[in-house]
Length: 200
Image 1: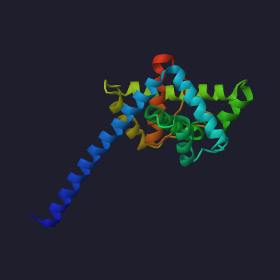
Image 2: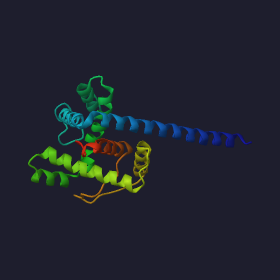
Image 3: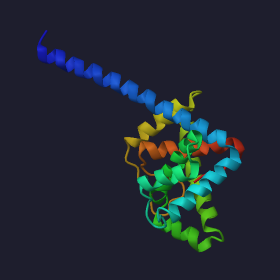
Image 4: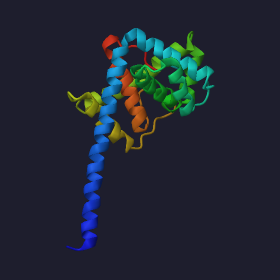
């Protein structure tokens, strides 16, 4: 057999094996994240959400720009200490915090600000609505018994697509990276058993 062909076949096999390994890793992470978010309960999710939001604003100075990942990691350690479950759930919150400005454009945030008696509560409610839209997409594509696999499939597919939303669109989820798609779904689905929980 031609040596070049052997090398090419070996490369394809390695790519397939690597892809399968990466898929298992992604789905294992999603499963751990869902378990962590659910295990906090409604009260724990609300508290962690509030503590991470406060840390992002005070420690990371994240009022108008997305907080830096390194700062959010340190904030999560400050909030959670060595609690592994808390740290996994805080990772989900941190990812959602970094994606808020991409998910809600300036026009939407200004509309909320003008009408809000409690800006953070109203902003959170709008984010919950967006997360619910993404969860509806998950249902429409055929949600499977294996939640982690279903979430991974949807978010992997969406990560390859270009989606744009009109300014101030309230029923549209734009293109988002896999990590943010997963974080939105994990936080929403993980809190859905308690009437939606506190979603950020």
